Length: 171
Image 1 (cartoon, one colour):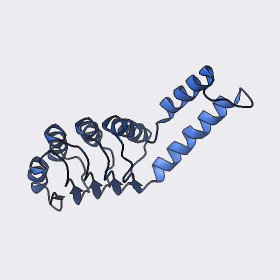
Image 2 (cartoon, one colour; image 1 turned 90 degrees about the horizontal axis):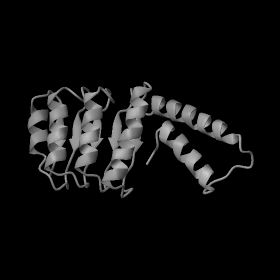
Image 3 (cartoon, one colour; image 1 turned 180 degrees about the horizontal axis):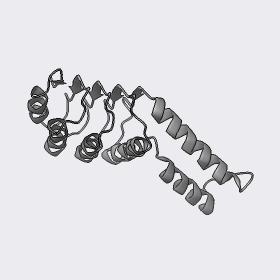
């Protein structure tokens, strides 16, 4: 998954130290991490769609992705994001809880479509998402796709029913 700039820099430094990666010029670490940092910030500020479909990412990968999205949000990014597709992965309750927490922090205020179908989200993850929706997260959201997850989408559907214009698809 995408990596926030700080873990990217730390991982690259670790790989350089261990010899797993190398540069022709040893002083390039700062250049590469600085370039990555600027590119991350620029891209996340401009992103209006993020598609991570069929990546087969695990729950740990999903949590790492949400960490990168949190870093983008903390830098003022994701303000233009309208669609987030995480379809057909292996993300579960930890990812859903981390995503719900991020949404509760006000991230992705323009998001219209959140697609989490065909993952491994159980009851705890659905409860976390429902709590975020009840609390006012996703103010612009029109549709949340949750079908083909082991948990019942009913709590999210009930929370969405209290909001005008938001539907939860679980067929």
